[in-house]
Length: 621
Image (cartoon, rainbow, N blue to C red; front, side, top):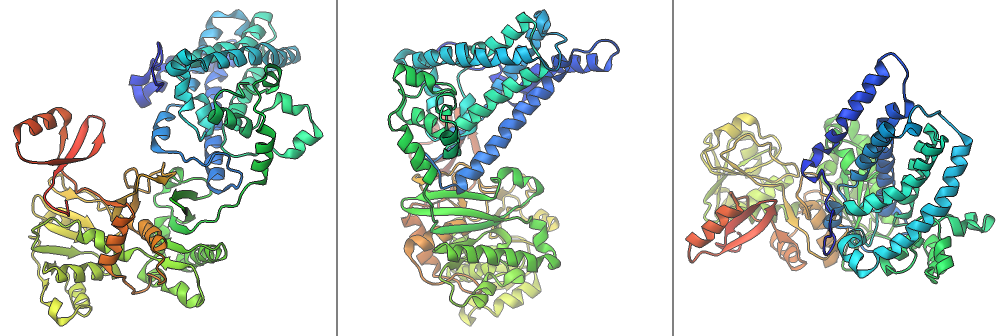
């Protein structure tokens, strides 16, 4: 939103949310009907909706390409990160696609020259090129300069300039009134073709594609135009901009106003003098070597849409540089015995690559660690005896998070789930706190009893009773057991995967995770099923391990000092999650505050019109 929103800032269909595309439904249905019916067919009218789909797909391709390159390229222009505020601000980038569809249908209805046009006309193509290079670029330049006047900038254009580190879709994120003016400018060639009878289907599609391509191209935050292009064709510097050219406009504001052709900036003295030097510097680039790598993998089949193409992401905390890599395998493949060798080979290659790149710590996320798969990462230590990169599985921090999530005053818990290194560590920690650990599986109970000292073993109880209200659960918990839990029970998972919610009268905690520090950069994507700005215990553990400079590995059967890891994590700014609580509307919460005296409440989350709150009753709250 602009700093001082002006008239017609909001898009007319904003309240429709994700249903906004129904606006086009009548025209789409009618075009399909005319296509199926006998008689003369207007190809542009029929193809309008496919053209809109192409524009949407074209932008999606640029989004994926840009984020992939941003995560790995050495030619990054602006080092500032993208945040969730920018993601939200640019969420409705496709509004302009809908507007263009409405415009095309309306013009086709009322302008005779836009009906039954041929597939191609050369004179129309020449006319479009000339009109774009002349009136469109010229008028855009002066309109853009006007938008940077304080009055218009604060009311409209500041919304677009809120994004310093641009993405392709940043190019079309503007207030409604501003986009309408752009559409009027871009319609000059198309309406001229229609009124002169020179319009063609290919030119309509081609001009839209050109506009989208150049917009997306120029808003990439990395340089991709090779220098040899300008060496062979020197005149191109006046008629083709580069990402560096437009990035300077987003950082310096009052220079480089041109649309796609810098010639007007050269003509009117608004060309940034540092452009050539910066462009060549960006082409040389700078290789960034991470200190920490988090190794994850795909989860559900649709999760590929939530990961960057190429499976890479990078973050920064102070001077510590982090990257996330992903094994191209889905969760279900990890449970296939014949896939284990292949998966371990991929993990081994990732560790070797990290070793060669000077990475300090690599953390194994999700199912990349496991007793059956690679003995909790120990397999790689045995293969590479002189490994400098430290392997971390996050079990120590996950144990600390679970122990500090247990409600105060708890005297007994039920521990349920497949036996694992993490389960044993949690059980020992509970026994050390004199909390009785009840187990309903005889085999799991006997295996765990062998892991603890005789003094602590007295806190372990084998029982068929499901009465405890606090359940520490892992993989292997079945639906029938959930139904046996008392009303109001808490399910606290100790594995990386969330518990399937079967009960509305019970509380479900998130898998072990922590809220990241405010100064952690480039955190604009959620990690699996975790909320925003939260990291899994495994990922946080790798970061803390590197920040502390610890020299030991945390894999195999090794568990670090749980209390030491927990305190170090808090000292570096990571925060524990507030426990799940009842959710009140803001109206009810106001009433609650006014009616309850002498009780302090901590507000920890807000979603739309709802706020969660929890009473401050101790350090574990």
